[in-house]
Image (tube, rainbow, N blue to C red):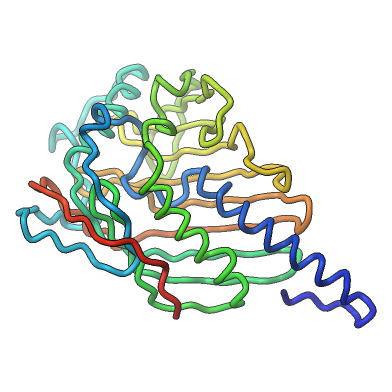
Length: 309
């Protein structure tokens, strides 16, 4: 750690360094549970039982290469309505929420793969440590996620103990966990309509979401849905259960954008308040999406660690 204590405080410094490293491991899990870097877009519903999810493992170095399929590339950053190219009428709030859930089911079935540029910025405010890591992200449905390092600037401690651990946790989460358990679906949440608002130049319906049980991975907060397309625009809130006593709270805001017919995350801001090191802030930006639709099969590759610069 880069703490500027006097020589007389070296014993205290070593103790705090150990506790901070322990906290950061837990912090990575907490930030992951808030919806950080969701590989398949909005986790709203699962299209069927476990048989619908093919077996695959995660990789951090091998790019997507599916020679057996004939996928169709989708041009990045082109907004395409799901049901029509004409201007859509405004939906009723109940219908918009239903369409939002339906879109996630369709996306889970049709999104074969994507590549994107991901930039992770992490700050430890009390120690003035900072790091920015740019990686190329590759996703292959349903459970393959790879990161290739591009550049890093900042403190090595933040890179090793915050950002790299967070990326690896995302890979492990995608590989091991059942998306249905944390999905924003009627099975996990109660929805309450809270009115209309304008967000990022779009008219949205606001819904309060309350989990049906207090379980790690679920959050209490709000979602914002486009009134014309039913696209998820934002999810925000706080986990209902922290996995560690080191964490007082974690708050997050995650924004989405329509990339072709898909809805994918473009920015998540997370703030954690800890009992030992104070506030930690992580921002993740994703851009230059290249989604691929309608595959026949998926490719399984071997999982590896996040490559170092």
